[in-house]
Length: 348
Ligand code: PHE
Image 1 (cartoon, rainbow, N blue to C red):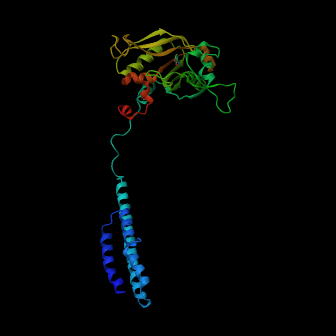
Image 2: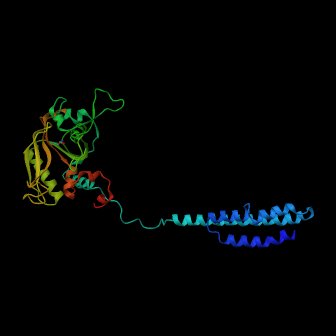
Image 3: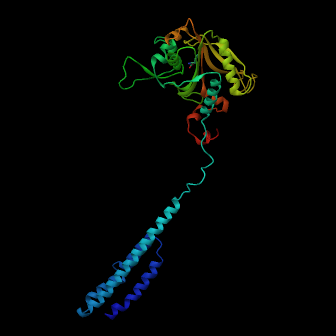
């Protein structure tokens, strides 16, 4: 019995020393296998206990039991300490200072939004309202009402995404609008004449995408309807708007152009603001930038939208906001605009 009891303090000391050095979960495992495992001193003592004579078993058994308890406490204590230390480390690593000022590199407006905002400001200063339109549009608004009936070859000028929604009347076709000109009809129907409105927004064409073509791009539609309106008003409006946008006097020119919803129809170019008409890379050496389609609103269109063509006349125009933004900021690939690339976007 003495043999058994006398070994206990040494085992306990060694366990305390080992426990002292515990740093992590695998140290704990090692501790447990060393002090509770099959080959541990504790299990040797337990075996020896069984061989002791009955009168000694009780006292020795108590001592060995107490040792087992102390070793168990030691291991539990270490596990608790370790869990506490890990929790503290986690909290420290996750700590954030909610009172810290926000990082200085906050977001910025997309180049298209920047140009759109400026264009809206300029037109608003000339008394134009800003209207919104539908991306999904009834074929009548996108084509028929604009003097482009189903059989009209002009329907092929714009590659169209036709859509059929669940539950739609199969005789009524819907499209992703190919132009913002649909807003002309909506605003005339809703507000009648006189009227001054621009409508910036997305349009969709079923085109192959390359550096200068995208299937989704932005246009700005303009419409002014009043009594005695002529092309001179259109010219003045566009010159004023470009002058403000580029902050310099801007020369424009009209060329004949065909759009079924205007008569006469025009293509409008402005003199290249970079080379002042001398010819450069941006204007492909022509000195002019093709800017937009325009013209006097066709009387059929006024009639279709419920405006009296005997009393009122008007001009309409449509230009590419995407192209304007690319020109203003010197962006040479249209795909960058929808790329969501932070290093591109953060330049603006
Ligand atoms: N909607 C025409 C286009 O997308 C542009 C335009 C608008 C032309 C208004 C004339 C009048 O090409």
